[in-house]
Image (tube, rainbow, N blue to C red):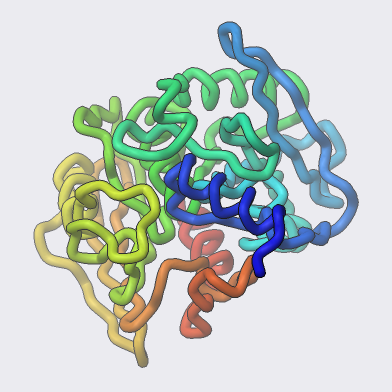
Length: 307
């Protein structure tokens, strides 16, 4: 018989309409030292984010920054565990930042307002662009950051946030990378070219590769296809119409370049890949097994390093 805790978790999922009910069921380990928590007020709302500084940080030399947006139903710590981005930051010498979404029932069941998704944040019409702008202002005032090398990535609802960041704050991001996400915004108008990497599995049943309503989606809406997003950015960045393509095992790479202002648009398709962070941690047994065909964190940092 299910206990009271099981009933609460089930009810929470139903109310929030989550895409990824993330690591509320897992106890996330830390990557290195404990992260620094920063709090800031955006309008009348208290927001927060976590910061991991690498050993290379000395407060004088400005370092690159990678914002990592958690999936719907996750939190900053779950994204840190899932992506292992802080471990990469320790090795490569960049600052890893984990913004916190919004929620009411638990500090670990948070969502982002990406217009058509998701949960509490969408219902309350949280101004996410204002939050990201305020976060970057606070980060720049508190740490030595290379403002020309600020990047954003995320999975699922967090991938939608990476797109939102590039749409609304293009002048502040050099590149973004979206894992199992969707370009939801009906009015995306970037002010300049932004390099974009998209990683998506063909067997994703939450945000289907070819669009439509996901069979496993808890935040059910008509999903735009991966190709829609790639075509949008290819057109906006003034890229060639034809991609250079590589096929290795179950991984297909398409690269559209050169584009305006030395930008590029790349699509990495994982045949048979599900709704997960490839090469990352599986946060709960009911979530898709991460594909072993690709290390998304390594792929993303390599892409950012080229831009």
